Structure formats: C-alpha cells, structure tokens
Image (cartoon, rainbow, N blue to C red; front, side):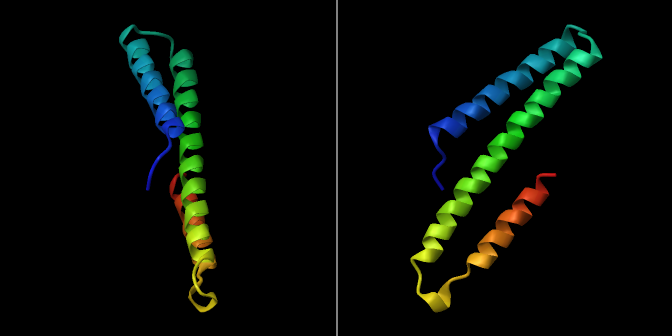
Length: 89
C-alpha cells in the first residue's frame, strides 16, 4: 500500500512531539505538563490510525466492487476494518 505524504508528515510531527516529551522529562518538567503532551501524542497517533484504516478500507472496497458479484466479500472487509480499529484500543 502507498501511504500519502500527508500521513507521513503527520507521523513526523508525532515523532517531534515524542522527542519534546522526552526533553520535558529530562528537564524535570511537571507531571501534568508531561501528561498533557503525552495525551496530545496519543490523539495524533489515533488520527493517523483512523486515516490509514479508512484509506485501506476504501481501497479494498473499491477492489471488491470490481470483482464479479459471486466473488464479492465487502462484509469481510468491513469486519476486518472494525477489528483493526478495535485492536488500536
């Protein structure tokens, strides 16, 4: 699967956030501030996960729609996408 430059850039921002959290810890910053930043990191990663799953599901559904009627299994694709979302929690 090809991943968009947008999603890669999002992950690079997350990487920067994580480095920032480590720096905060090394500097002995307050726990509340560190937790706040960790929460921001988690939210950013969650958005990336949803985007990747949504893109993958969309591609799979389009591929399925091009198959013959008797070979389609769109229900399985949807169930697989739901399972992927559940694994993230």
